[in-house]
Image (cartoon, rainbow, N blue to C red; front, side, top):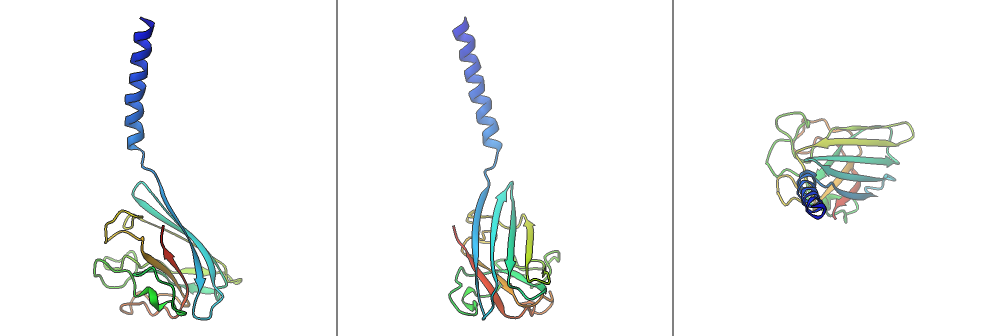
Length: 175
């Protein structure tokens, strides 16, 4: 009788254990390091973390001019050009107009501007369910793209770039 109860308990734990573990989504993480571009001294690092269908970008920068700056995801994971033009234009797989992230029309690579303090340091925190890490969906997957930091703020109006000026830092998003 004891063996039967232990067997039932073990089977029950296996069944319930499988159910609970199958509903937990593992997080995916990609860490990137930025290269200075266009003669700047901008340095930085960022982490993309995907959990429960939401991607969070956390980035830290130094060497920026104090004030407002644009940050975008660009279409190619190529930072080889000295001015980062090798990364191509803004990532726009849904063929929308450039705009503020909260606007109906915006590129998937558009993000909010951020501020560098008087010492040229800045932190960026951005969250969205419109991206994924390595999911294979060409309209959502950020792998194989690049992140570009610009010298100026995005005006959210000038098409297709936002008139954000030189590309001062670049990093490919690769696993």
